[in-house]
Amino acid sequence: MPDTLSITDNRTGKTYEVPIEDGTIKALDLRKIKTDAEDFGLMAYDPGFMNTAACKSRITFIDGDKGILRYRGYPIEQLAEQSDFLEVAYLLYFGELPTRSQLDDFKRTVLSHTIIHEQTKKFIDGFRHDSHPMGAFLSTVAALSTFYREVKNIFDAQNRVIQFERMVAKMPTIAAFCYRHSVGMPFAYPDNDLSYAGNFLNMMFKGTETKFKPNPVLERAMDVLFILHADHEQNCSTTTMRGIGSSHCDPFTALAGAAAALYGPLHGGANEAVLKMLVEIGSKDRVPEFIRRVKAGEGQRLMGFGHRVYKNYDPRAKIIKKVAFEVFEVTGRNPLLDIALELERIALEDDYFVGRKLYPNVDFYSGLIYQAMGFPTEMFPVLFAIPRTPGWLSQWEEQILDPEQRIVRPRQVYLGYDEREYVPMAIREESTQTV
Ligand code: ACO
Image (cartoon, rainbow, N blue to C red; front, side, top):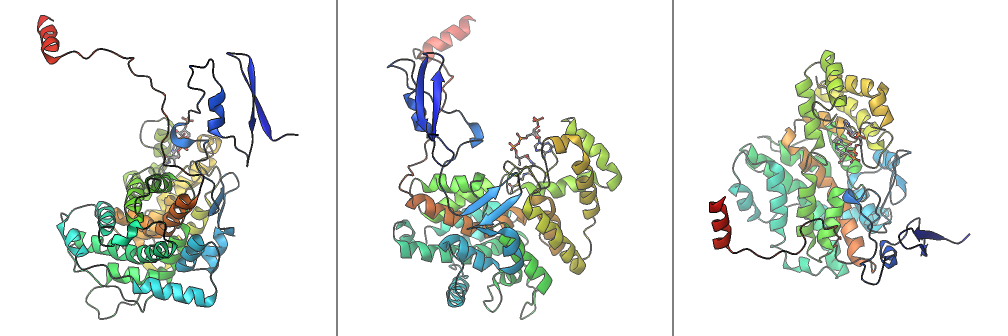
């Protein structure tokens, strides 16, 4: 059987044969389907890219129906159980698990880049005290591109590695500084004796003690959450990263754009929205009424439920639920947990959610953990952006090195006016007065 698709255009009666490769047809092959020589040719219309593959990738695999997530072939469950975030960052970017000495070198290098230029603090100081830390974070990341002029040499492989290590290293520092500015606390500098996650907790929560000692359970929980958020193939922010990167701008600027995409409540802002929703519901006995309103379309959606790709339990949500109970052993139970458990129980039995394949996603429990650890809700999207950095950069590099890629430039279906004559202001005013 040939790997082709026969398409008959009923407008003309003509049949076309289009090659099928890797389960796709090339959208450009549709262009030859025309009614006459003047016709532009057929296009695919796909708002939100529901069924359009924009790239070929070897980084992250998701089977949304089966609830599978793998980085470079390794199941997320094994990585969350046995690896750590910096090893996962290495894996994502370089494509293979490191040897012991490669990993030691990588960790040493990343930890030696954690300090940010002192002038960066001036930008952060310039934000109002009540600025959202995500707004401050993404603006500071964009500003950092002006500090390293060599970032523009994106086709120099060694230079790209340096920027990768630099950005993975500096994101927690920028994030923590933005937070401390927002609460009026002095910046806490990196402590490179600590692990990546431990150091982040140090920069966030260090008080007057001379040395911050992270709780090992919370440090590991932070690291696992970082692993789970490290990449998720072609989601909204990664597509933004690739889109901006396709113009060949530097990775800091592209990453600031990706972080901006992550900011929204339908993406990285969802766990903040989950907490707000749980607070609004207020108690377990009000859950059925809330579900009724969601189903009737009277209020908001059930935040933390549903996913464009997963039509099964998000595998990250399973791991996060387990981490949540470990964290609550240390911090005490988050009182909102009971409402979340009740919501999940009812929704998973309800035809509305079951029929639409709506299951808890990664954000359903992550906010509860972050809150119990002491992070304010406004920091949640920032906590997502830190670990997504290696994923974004791996995807960006794959994009710029892929010879099939072009600058991103979708088509549109124009439904506006046909050509019409410009009406000078004097005549427009005259006709208004007449009316
Ligand atoms: N609550 C109630 N109904 C929902 C929900 C939800 N959370 N999600 C989807 N639906 C319903 C829609 O109303 C629609 O119903 P209909 O067919 O009767 O019109 C159907 O399910 C399909 O929904 P779509 O919006 O078409 O699904 P899409 O794939 O475009 O949206 C999204 C995915 C944005 C994640 C959506 O499920 C949602 O808004 N969820 C809540 C926000 C959230 O948790 N976002 C985090 C995603 S994970 C991440 O970004 C890390």
